[in-house]
Image (cartoon, rainbow, N blue to C red; front, side):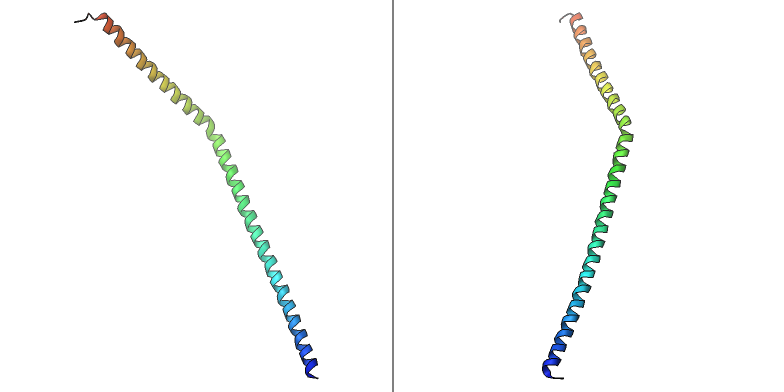
Length: 100
């Protein structure tokens, strides 16, 4: 075999090895991409499930929250009415008492 034939053979082997490495790299990259996509989809699915649970929980708690708010408003109005009545009673009492 001549030097030129040996060099061509080495060059051919080098190119073949390079192609094999590129194919292996491509395969690893594809596997990594699939794994990343699967991980992202799992995260997204988990977030959707969590959001659904939160919405269901909020919907279940809503009647209680509304009742609490209504009771709070009634208590506030009753307190304000009691204050107004007390002020009115003081005014009437002050009018009934003669000035000194």
